[in-house]
Image (cartoon, rainbow, N blue to C red; front, side, top):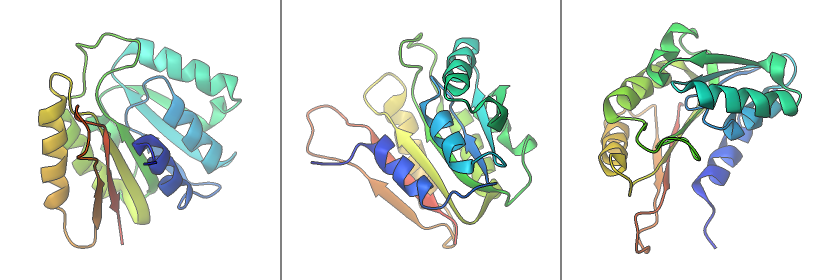
Length: 185
């Protein structure tokens, strides 16, 4: 059985995150990745969580508070493309993107190629050597195919000190979510 992209993203991020680290949830959504990151950075670490939707920030904040990690997370109701204004270059150990739309929310409000590519450029500059950036792409919804292909093209243009791994299933009837992993040497 194949591992879900989100499970693999968490496993890969867990391998690099340590107590006191800085991590970013680029797309806070309902807060699952935010809670995961907060659990890994520990009491002295911080997570920056971004989302443009107030309902996503509220949902993520509630999940983070319920987990007891409220003091570890700083929420930004803003585009993930603004993350570079909130962290120093080469200061972040792990950055997680979970593209698409807010589960349970308005499916017409989606991440878009332009904003996502700007965010990915910012994210690459924020990663520490040894850090990891994961992008879970969701083709198959309006806008998702184009955004997914834009992410693959972006990853293919990275310099050699950013090795890329793409985990994509091709044996499905509908386009399946897939994972793009970028590490910084």
